[in-house]
Image (cartoon, rainbow, N blue to C red):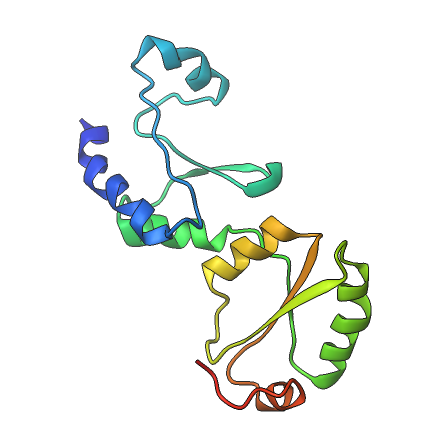
Amino acid sequence: GHCQKLKPTWEKLPAGFKGVVKVGAVNCDNVVNKKLCAQEEVESFPTIKFYMAGGRGVETYEGANTPKALYEFAVERLPSEIVNLRTLPHLEKFKSQNITHSLSRCGAILLTDKYDTSPLYKALSAHFHPAIAFAEARASNLKLAEALGVRTFP
């Protein structure tokens, strides 16, 4: 049925997420799983649910059953605790407020030539929040790079 058609797509997902999103499957036809499936309100097959990190909620996926669509759905919902640095005052505020208030008094700043936040960086920020403050400067922000002593972007 529909679940068997989805299986090849489902099996490709873990490689695409590279440890950022955990992927699993439950066979609701198996008597051992009936209670869990009822508790999670699974009424039709396949049902795809996205459980956000830290108990931030559950969302049922209703889009196309393609690897790209499932990947985009998950990445859009990754929690993020990242401050977007655009100017030198943003950098100073991040250092004086965010880093000072983090449990470790440490911060991580990603300088990137990309325009979008990477899924891995989002996942790291959510996992280590509030111990470490995370920020990023996107699109080769040369003024911030210079202020931090960075000359080139990887």
